Image 1 (spheres, helix red, strand yellow):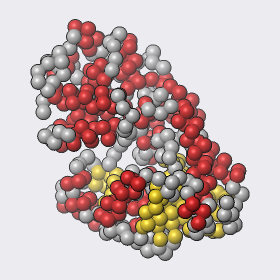
Image 2 (cartoon, helix red, strand yellow; image 1 turned 30 degrees about the horizontal axis):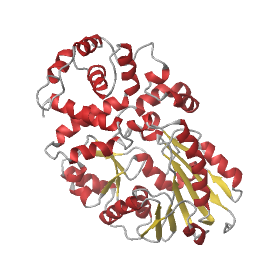
Image 3 (cartoon, one colour; image 1 turned 90 degrees about the vertical axis):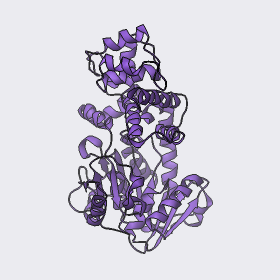
Image 4 (spheres, one colour; image 1 turned 60 degrees about the horizontal axis):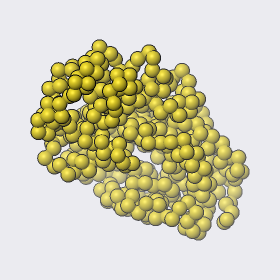
Length: 439
């Protein structure tokens, strides 16, 4: 494809994202699925155009407004090519020449403001702090409370593409063996600095083409998520629940920790996600998992199995602020009312999952959020209404499961992109002392 055709495709995808409420990666995948003729390198370049706009939408819109340039996906793309990717005006005009498969010619107004952006950088001293950090304005106070003077550094990291992390499937390989298998296919990987079962690729590759992936030696999983699963300390012969299993990423990690021995129940309200998990479980060679579709956190199955499990892992639905490296479009979809609704629902789900924990067992609360309202505040609120539980310091569990010193904190684990090179992630661990009531 020509550069112009790539830009035209990127504008098409951005238009579809703007007109719907589905995640950007789903929309892009559908677009490419319907156009099999687009090769891997072209797909990568088109995606790079799309995500550069999504990451920096607030700053791009500020410049567009300043230039009185209209708005919308086309204007954002033109501004992104100039301010983010560093294209010169002549190159922008050459790719937008109106030929088949290329964007329409620039209007005189577009020519003027594209050239007017040439000598500027993306950031401008007059930008509000939220705009300069490509952060929704309503979320700025929440981020300020968490990061303070580190806000710019953390947002810069959240606006940078994430690395590709793999979790080694201990049911089929160790880290050295998996690394050698990848190297045999020409893929360079290095150990992740925090997770003892992780590998980080030096560059992006189509994983579906790799035998190491197809045969289940490795699974895509951010290092932060790997660590959360390790901190569950799920062991052979235990009874374990993954209460919000999703598509099964942490279920796979928990099963590997259990060496396929014991009982692991993957609970999820979405039947479609459970079906996706089934394919992943087969590929990984996991055979100790029961998939359980629940009607909600108050499903009767929870009451029937109260107090029956050694570990209950609750990776709670959240605003997902810690995943913006991978899903930058998500930050433009969230609203204040979403956070308020989630905070209430999180407490309901956590307390329901707690009913499953046996005396002496553990409840693991995890989020891919960086907001205190979804993290420490929720852990404290849970302890205030559940006297049967006490907080187990994460530092102690870290020493027992991973070894060494916890990277910051004592009672909770908080990982961030700037400090740790991971997604934003939070973990709290609770231990039960008495028998649960069957309410």
